[in-house]
Image 1 (tube, rainbow, N blue to C red):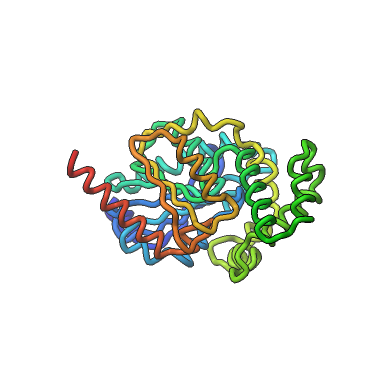
Image 2: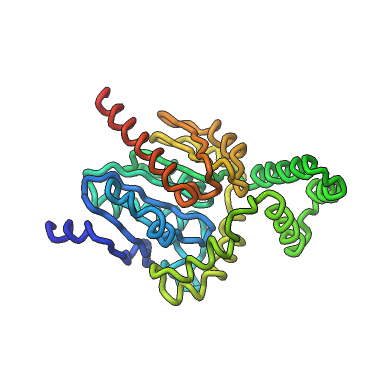
Amino acid sequence: MGSQKANWQMNRIYSVLLGGTFTTMHIWSKSVQNPVLLFVHGGPGSPNRHHIANKLLPLSNRFTLVGYDERGCGDSRIPTTFPLRIEDLANQLRGVILYVKSLFPAAPLFVVGESFGSALSLITLSTHSLPVDAYIGYGQVAERRPLEIQKGMLFLEELIKRGKTKDFEFWKKKLTSPSFPSSKAETNRYLAAYYDLLEKKDIPSFYEREILPYQNSHEFSKKAKRNQGRDNAVGRNVLFHSLPDSFDPYLRLPMPVHILAGEWDIVVPPSYQKSVYDRIEAPSKTMTIAKEAGHVVPFDNPKAFEDFLMNLVIGCRETKKLS
């Protein structure tokens, strides 16, 4: 056991058999006593182990960092005959939590959910009794349809602000049509217009932010890199569109909840995240707007994320002292 603990203080990639398939995870740890941050990535189909390695390793002095690939993407490959269902991803996350807790039984464990992974986290944490001390969500997602409506409103408001009257009339008619979108091409046209209008012009392109770092990373196998595009497409088409129509059963959590919304997030606007936050029932909850950050707060602004974590940990310690 002692030699294993020594290994845990090193960077190590694990392949763990969970639910009949292997889950790949990377653990960075310098002390078995440090609070554990278990990152649940978004996409679906967009593992973030490489972002953790590139942006957050300074945190490993005070926290144990755990990133894993959700079933069916990255290096958590599955046979093509296996179904790709949200309930299977929830069971996988449950297994990851229990496995990580077995490695660090004395350390507080925080689940950190990103975008689709934040919805998956709510589903998992609300339906299983798990040894999790707090939940942190950024780019927090719940029901899909209200998110799409709020993004549409944000888009139309911005068109009006910029005096784009013709574009406003065109897209208002489209977005209010019951048949929208009528095709994949129409969806792609809308998304291109949406992000071209709202995304900050001085940030790198999606290719530079997401595709290139993944392909250049040593975190993933050649097979995972070959399948990056396919994993993203399958994840969006199968998993994201399978989110429950109502999240009411999943908004009652037995642990403290902390929502961290990037002020520049246009993928999941802060107004939408606030509407989800308002409905959450938990022993305690907070919502913080992260300055100078977009959809992926920890990687957009690691310093803001670190400050948030330190305040959270100090608050947790003070609460334990009072109790």
